[in-house]
Amino acid sequence: MIATGIPLTWMEKAYAALSPVAFNCAQLVERFRGASEEEQQSRLGYVAPRNRSSIWFHGASAGEMAAAGALVTMLRSRGYRFSPVYTSANRAGVDYIRRTDQQASAVGLMPWDTPDCVSRALDRWSPKAIFLIETELWPRFVFEASSRRIPIFSVSARIYPADLIRYRTIRPFISPTLRRITRIFAQDEVERDRFVQIGAPEERCLSAGNLKYLDINSTMFRDPSFADELGMEEGDQIVVFGSIHRDEIAKLFDTIERIVEKGARVIIAPRHLTAVESIAQEATRRRLNFSRRTNVTAARQWRLLILDNMGELSRIYSLATCAVVGGGFERHGGHNPFEPVIAGTPVAFGLHFFHFGPEARALKSVTPTAQVAGMEGLDRLLTSWLSDEDLRRRVVELQRTVLPDGSAIAARYMETLEPWLSNAMAEYGRES
Image 1 (cartoon, rainbow, N blue to C red):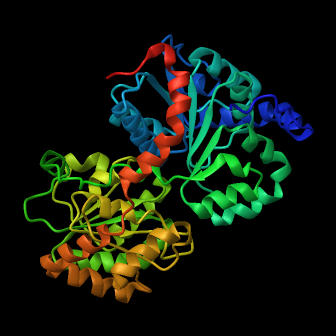
Image 2 (tube, rainbow, N blue to C red; image 1 turned 90 degrees about the vertical axis):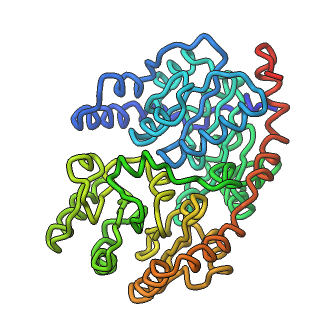
């Protein structure tokens, strides 16, 4: 059943009245920062009309767009014919999906969450269904879609532990939004319980798994042309430091410098591009031969490569000899430590992985030394991995044994989605 007929609360009416002021300010800020005309129009809901049957996929950034892409691939493999339209909260997500889905009907920034902006976009795209990736809970967008009887699915749904208190505080405001969502596919039972705690109907929430793990049953193979594009040579040992926060840079750089001194090459991917300059300054201070990804063709002899673009980290991991995932060397909660393992690379990570607790605990259970308490332990671990190819192979084989079952995740999603999608897409049929 599509959750319609839930009237606006007084708080939602106040939000609708005040949101245009807030988002008009955001529009001015984006324009000042160089937003293109296309981006500004997309924010206002002036998206290109689509006549074909469309399904709308929305996520915050590149990681969520990767999950959206995996979902689209799964639906296409089941024979559904539809025109995917994508929105992201930032340019990184837009750039990622443009590179990875050549069949995308439309891609743009998410319209501002005001009555006029979201109504324009919904009228122009007329989606048969909407998929919101992870924690994208925009009250007005959900209200307008439910008013049009459009099924809305929150998929790979999660709420970070640090955000749970905030959502509990605003439960009277966010609960009606959650009750308008058709189904909430939580990443696990813990996440399902969190959604119920903040007002989601228990009967509409299920533990289904993370869409990012749909394609993990195979290893991503090294792409020689991509390696050559980055200036790598056969036999290079590459250590990738992924999703590193600004305040982790100084702590990790001694380790990076020692790796380089031993003959390996290092790629560092900051969590936020605002940290690129800090990394470059530290590399300059230490007199390391470094290059930026966007300038790599002019400086192919780098020992340290700074990833100053977004959306390539998973491909970078596939080139790595071993990897270190950041966010856990300071108290940021960590980032997904399964990503390098999916790419066939052994991974190390810090202590503070409360945002990815199940993943960190699973990896630690089979490779206890992979979670390191300090830089000395990280130095020893990376030295042992770089010097012993058989050890690296054994480690990644063990780590891959705890990856989720992608086929089981797909089955859980499709068991619930198929009746809804078959009804929504009935007039367009399915490929045999």
